[in-house]
Structure formats: structure tokens, C-alpha cells
Image 1 (cartoon, rainbow, N blue to C red):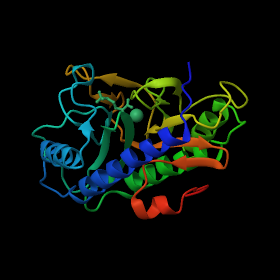
Image 2: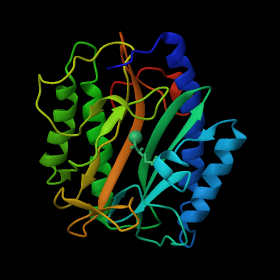
Image 3: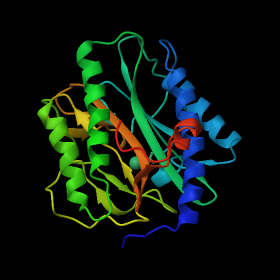
Image 4: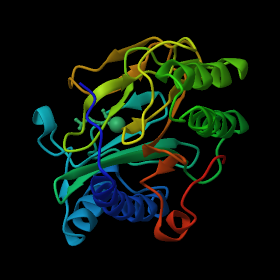
Length: 260
Ligand code: MF3
Ligand code: CO
């Protein structure tokens, strides 16, 4: 069942999203060589609580930390710990918080220092694929239009979209209907309607889309050991087009954004 949000509920999600954006910006700035993923997690946890919110991932299905941090060939759901990040790494930050009963979920992949041109291209194409999906995130379109747009942008660049994990509806719960795959067929799936709130999150592998889960029960790895990147925002479908709820205060003031 797809849970449509009222204008007021979307405003609450926007407030949660702004706070989350500020935390992600601080984390991005802290992604320096030598810092550990555990340090980054503690930074985010503190900032979320300072903002009066709850780190939503902590304890979610017994997940042990407040953020997911996935390095290089880790796709998503990496567990922060003692691992230090190094120049040349690409680091995917993924976090969610709950404020006034509503979730915001966002993340992105950050290059540490100088990274290879291939890695930069992967990050760029992944973010672009999000914007390709956004162009189709219009009321009256079908969800498959959005999914297919992400997939074709990624595949045109020679990369692949992960099949085993998908985006999701979001609101009073982190995961609500519908699932938001990053692959699909135009003209299929539920119709997009004003009031839908979706976490759109392309996960893009440089090589094959096959993944496996490490024995820690969480960390998703590329099967071929090649790099992976990710990009996520929480988005509301409105009568005037898609609205990103996880922008910074200044960006958010621009309101609707049709293209990157
Ligand atoms: N952003 C992810 C998702 O949407 C991360 C959730 S995993 C968690 O599925 F367990 F850490 F919460
Ligand atoms: Co998500």
C-alpha cells in the first residue's frame, strides 16, 4: 500500500531532510586520508543527536551503527569501524535520521584526495543517473519510467545497476511501498502521484551487477572486486514536479529542481 503524504507531512520530512543534508556535508568534509570510518560514524551520530533527531539506522534490524560507510568495492551497508580511508579511495556515505516521526535518507560517494579518472567517472555517472530518474519523477508517469531512465543512463556509460538492492518509499518508516528499482521497463509499475515520497538511490557497479554479502551479515560487495558508487536523495512527487527533501537550506530555497 502506497502511503501518500499531506503537504504538512512533506514539510516535516523537509525539515528532517535539511538536517540530514547538513550532517552529510560535515561528513563529506571529514573524509580525509587517515580518518577511520568509525570516526566518521561518531561525527554523524553526534550531529544528528545535536539536531534533536534520532540516528535511524542504529538498531534497525539490529544494525550496529548510525551510518553505513562503504569503501571502494563495498557497494552499500558497510559497517563503520577501525578501517582508515586512504587517498585514492572512494567512500559511500549513507545515513538516515528520524525527526518528529519522519525519516530522511540520503547519501553519496566521496573521492578521498586524488582518485583515478575511472573512479571519478563512475561517481559522476552515478549522480547523473539519479538526475535522469528525477526527470521522469513526474505525477502521471509510471515508476518504471523512472527506473528505466536510471538504468539506461548507467548502461550507456558501460556500467551496471545493482539488482539485489533497490530504493524505496519512505515516511514514518524508512522502508515503505513502493520499491524503487534502478532498472525496469517504461510504462510499467505504479503510477506516480502527488504525495508519494521516495528514496531514489542508484547503486552502480563499474563491472558486473553481481554482489555478495560479507560474513558480517551486512556489507554488500561487488562480486568481481571492481568499484561501486551510490547516490541517494529523499524526493517528494508534487503537482509541480519532483522536490528533493534532502537538500541544504540554501539549495532547498530554490525549491523545485528539474535537472542537475
Ligand atoms: N539507505 C539504506 C536503505 O535505504 C540503508 C539502510 S540499512 C540500515 O536501505 F540497516 F543501516 F539501516
Ligand atoms: Co535508502
